[in-house]
Amino acid sequence: MRLTWKDAVATTLVCVIVVVYALFLVGADLPVVRHVGGVTSVIVLLGTVAGCEMSRGDLFTRRRSPATLLYIALASALGITALLSSMVALMTASETALTTLVAATVALWLIATVRHAVTRVPPEGRCGFGPRTRGG
Image (cartoon, rainbow, N blue to C red; front, top):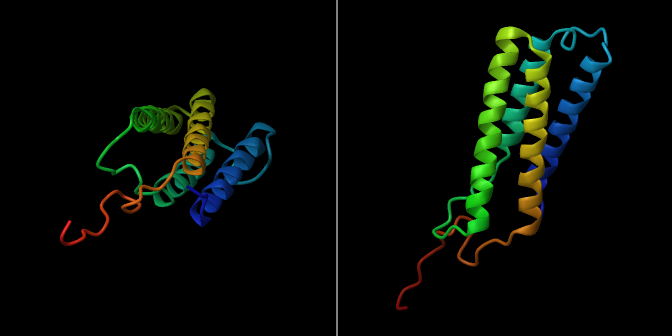
């Protein structure tokens, strides 16, 4: 499968996330990056757009290979980690939780992008539910 414009948008958003986090780490005096809550909010917003809105419907195939099941399990674990760490970061202003959120978000982007780059589209269509042919 080739990478698409959605992968480019997701990559750009993840780069913005990393820059925002780096600005927080160096103590930049900008309104959004002064506090853990602001940085967490930006990362959750951009990560949601990068991860959810730019995601593909290619996991909903009729047959799931062991590699696909492993990907689903890993992506689910990382997504839960990102969700929980974002909640902790927002509630407690924990820099450790913020770091965990950034790491989980970047890891999710990385495994999704690699998967998009190396997997093939099923012949019957992107989601495995292509048009039916008559007569056989």
